[in-house]
Length: 463
Ligand SMILES: Cc1cc2nc3c(=O)[nH]c(=O)nc-3n(C[C@H](O)[C@H](O)[C@H](O)COP(=O)(O)OP(=O)(O)OC[C@H]3O[C@@H](n4cnc5c(N)ncnc54)[C@H](O)[C@@H]3O)c2cc1C
Image (cartoon, rainbow, N blue to C red):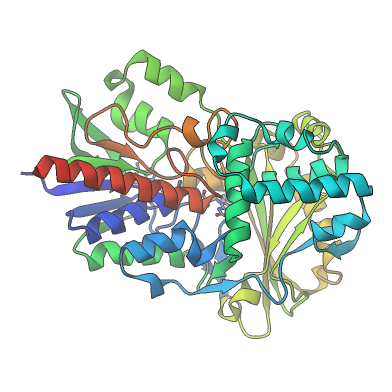
C-alpha cells in the first residue's frame, strides 16, 4: 500500500496541470514544488502594487487551447478569466512605425513574393498531416515559396518568438500546427490576475479533488528498485511511497540526478545527452507612473538575413536594434498596476553566453528600442526589474531554456521525447517531453497526453 497513487515532482504548468487532472480522476495525488510559489517559468511576483510576470507571456489560444482544456477536464473552466488581444489587436513595430503584418507586408515586398506569401498562408491552413513536415526545417519549407529576405526574416521573427529557436533549425510541421491552430481559434490573450493565475487554478484543482500540495520543498531522489518506481525522497529526508512518479523537473535533471544514470541503458543516456534546448532570454519589466501606450502586445522586428543575424550574435555582437516581444499586462487587466500606472514587460531570445558577456549592451539596446516605440517612456519610469538567464535557471532548470527541448526538425511531433520513461511507473511532463504548441501550451498538451497514458495504465491494472 503506497502513501500516494502518484507524486508529481515540480509545479510548473505541466506538473500542476497533470496533478489537477489525475486528482480529478480519483488518483491520490501529491505535488511537490521546490519554490514557495507554483508556476515555474510561468509565474508572477508582487512589487510596489504591481503584479509582474517573471517571463514575458502571451497565450496563443487562451482558454480555447490546451490551457483551457486542462480546466475543462477538471470541470473548472471558469477558474481562469481570459482577456483577448483585441481592440487593439497585436501590432508589429518596424522602421519606426507600427504595422499589421502579414497584411501590410504587401507594401514592403515585390508583388510576386507577396502572392507566394498569400499562397503559403492558404496552404498552411489546408495541410492535414502536419507530421509529414516534422523533420523538415521551416526555412526549407518557406524557400519553396519565396526567397525574399523580408518574408524570411518575418517568419524567423515569429518562429524565434514562438519556439525560441532560429527558423533554419525549427520544425516546419510544428510551425504549421501552431500557426493554423492560432488562425482557427483567433484567441490570443492573457489571464486576469497575471501568469500565475493559470498554475494557481490547476493547483486549486489538486486540493479540491483531494490531493496534497507541498511548496518550498524539493524532491531529492526518485527512488527506483528493480526497474520500478517506489516513491520520492524529499529534501527533509521524508520518504513518500508511490507507484507512479511524474517529473516536471526536465529530462536531464530527472534522468541524471533525480533517478540516477545507473538505472538507464547507455543508449537512452546518450539520447538524453544529445537533446538540444531552446535558447534563453532576458526580460525587462517597466513600472510606469503614467500610461505610454494603448497596445496590449507589440513585436518589434528588424528585417535582415536571419542566419547572418544569429551568426553575429553567436560571435558576441549585440544588435543595435534588439527584436522584442512587448506585453502590456495592465492593458489586459488594469488591476495588475496601481490606478493610473502602467506595467510593460519586454523580452528577447538570447543565447545565455551572449547575454552574460554583454549584459549592459543587451539591456541598453533593448531600452533604446522601447523608447523608440513609446517616446517618453523613460521619463515615466518608476522602477525597472531585469530577469536574466540566471533567473530562468532557478525557475526552469540549469539549461536556462525558455521552452525546454527545442522544437527543431529532429525533436518535434513524432520525434519528440516520450512522456513514458523506460522505467515502470516513471513519466515526464512539461516542455521536455510530449506535446506540441507554443511554450505553456506545449507543456499543458504534454500533461493532457501523459494523463491519458497514466489513466489507461491504471484502468488496465484494475482489470
Ligand atoms: C522569458 C520567458 C518568456 C516566455 N514567453 C512565453 C510566451 O509568451 N508564451 C508561452 O506560452 N510560453 C512562454 N514561455 C515558456 C513557458 O513559460 C514554458 O514553456 C512553460 O512555463 C514550461 O512549463 P513546464 O511545465 O515545462 O514547467 P517549468 O516552468 O519548467 O517548471 C518546472 C517546475 O519544477 C520545479 N522543480 C524542478 N526540480 C524540482 C525538484 N527536484 N523538486 C521540486 N520541484 C522541482 C521548478 O521549481 C519549477 O517550478 C516563456 C518563458 C520564459 C522564461
